[in-house]
Length: 427
Ligand code: AMP
Ligand code: GLY
Image 1: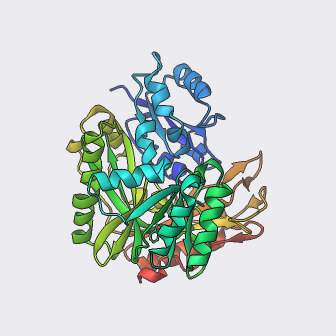
Image 2: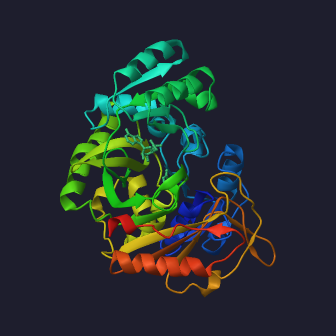
C-alpha cells in the first residue's frame, strides 16, 4: 500500500501533539512540519516555511510529493490556504484538512458566527452588532442589559478581543474605544455585544467533511495566567480531558443541539467544510450554549485530547478527505489527561526569549510537547510565551495532575512559570 506524505502547518504545542500522534501511524511515509519547533523535529522533519507563505508551501508540496496537508492554526485558513489549493491546477487534488475561507468565517468573524447560530437554531446568547456609525445605538443597547457586559471585536484579535465589563460605565468606555478608536485595529470595526452566560466553560470538538462528522473528546482549558483563574487571558495555561461535569447525557445534548445542527447548517448554507470544528461552550444549568466557534483544534486542549484517542489519527484524516468518516468508530482511553503549560516569566505581557531549557530528558511519566522552542547546536531554547506543555494520563484526575506538576517542576529555564492549580476546580 502506498503510504502518505503529510505536511503539517504550525509551530505550537498543538502541532507537536498532532505530529507525535501522526508519527505513530503505519500509514505515514514522511511527515513535514512548516515551520514546526524543536519538538516537532523529533516526530518529523521541520521545513522553514511560514504557514501564510502560500507560494512557498506550493513549491514544497510539489517538490516533496506531499499527499495531505493538515492546517494547525486559524490564520492560514482565514487567509484562504484551502481556497488557494483548490484554485491551483497542480494542487487541487491534494486534500487539505482545514476549511476554506467561507467556513473559516465561523472563527474569523464573530458577527458571522452569531448570525449562523441564530439562523440554524443553535443555542447561544442574545446579541446585537454595532459599528462606529451606530455607536450611539450600541450605548443605548448596553443600557437595556444587565451587568456584566460582554463585548467582542468581530475579527481575529489574537484571543484578546473579548472584554467582560463589570459596570455600564466601563462597557460604554470600552465600546467607544473599540469602535471609535479602533482599539483592535480592523478587528474591532464591528463589535458584538452579547448576553452574559453564567455557567462553566468547556471545549467540544469534531472533525467533519461537511457531510459526515466524528465527535472527539471534550476538554477544559484554563485561560487565565494566575492561580484561581485570575489575571489576564492567555492562549491557555493547561487543560483536562475528559471533563467530569460533561457526562454522557450532556455530551449527547452537545451533539444533538450544537454539533449536528452546525454541520447541517453549513450544508444548508452551501458552505463546504473539511476540517475541525471547535465549539467553545458554556454549560448553563446542564444545557450547552455556544460562546464561540473555532475552525481548528484548541491549544492546549489538543495536548490532553489527542493522547486519549486510540485510533490512528492519519486514518481519521484520510477518511475525512475520502468520505468514509462514518466508518470510523472513535476509541478513547478512559483515563484522564492533565496538561500543564510552562510559560516564560512575564507572559502574556512582555517576556524574554532565548533561555536554555534543561531537564526535558528527565521526564519519564509524562508526555512533553514543545510549544515555543527552537534549538541551536547544543541546546533547546525558549522562543515564545508558552514554551512546554506537559501531559500525563492517569487513572484519575488527582494523579494525572500530580504527575504533570511533578514533571513540570523538572523542566527548568530562567523565569519559567506554570499554574499549580490546573484541574483543581474539577476535583
Ligand atoms: P472567546 O474569545 O469568545 O472564547 O471569549 C473569551 C472568553 O470570554 C471566554 O472563554 C469566556 O470565558 C468569556 N465569554 C465569552 N462570551 C461570553 C458570554 N456570552 N458570557 C460569559 N462569558 C463569555
Ligand atoms: N485554548 C483556546 C484556543 O485554542 O483558542
